[in-house]
Amino acid sequence: MASKIAPSAQEILMTDFQTLVSDTEKLLAHTATLAGDQADELRGQISDSLLKARETLRLTEESLRVRGKAAVTATEDYVQSNPWQSVGIAAGVGFLLGLLATRR
Image 1 (cartoon, rainbow, N blue to C red):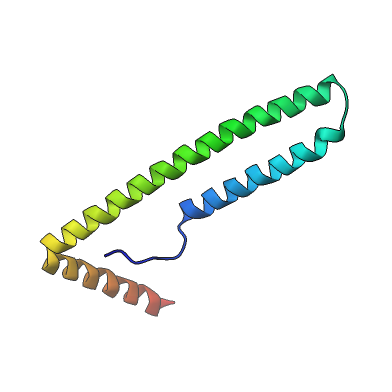
Image 2 (cartoon, rainbow, N blue to C red; image 1 turned 60 degrees about the vertical axis):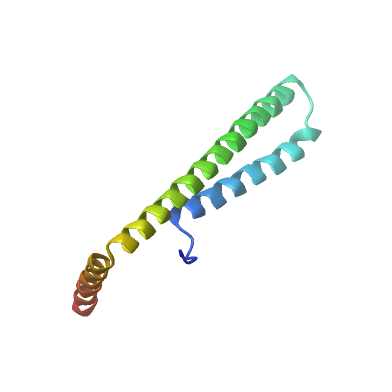
């Protein structure tokens, strides 16, 4: 069973991207008071960009979830089919990290 860990770089990136989209939507709402053809054109371009960004965000988030679940499943399968090798690998990595930590 996989445990919940600290947010990964991908999750942080997704959160930052969502914040960017939200801030851009607020900017678009504030520019509604501007008049003129150029302002209307700018708002249209921003709206189109936001729609594309939202779709990209949705697709990326979906892809990350699928890949993450696949990685967890593959890891769990490997550990269950090779428990002693997994223990050996974990011990080796722990030993190396211990060596690196004591050098600092």
